[in-house]
Amino acid sequence: MNQIKVRKNFIIAIPKDLQDETSIKEGDIVEVKVDELGRIIISNSNKTDEEVCPVLASKGIWQDEIDGVDYVNQIRKEWKSREESLKL
Image (cartoon, rainbow, N blue to C red):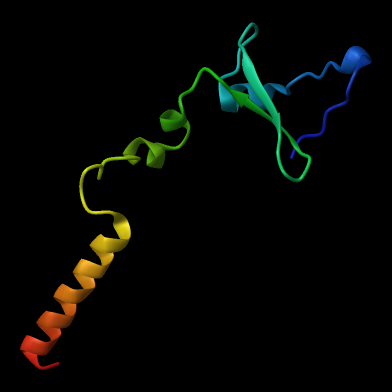
């Protein structure tokens, strides 16, 4: 974890290693928010949510299809049926 000093007029400098890790460059626009614990979060707004978290790219792929809970219940019924047919 990096610690940085808040300068006059509440200016902060992002350490070089974090700049490299986040690909933040001079002149970029970043998003700043406070979470429920009071922590300040700075996000690179140049990246989409899908680029930051590939799992989000799959959001909505089952639209107009069975929802996740119903799908799991359907699979469980199939397993139960197979178990009964094999007399396990």
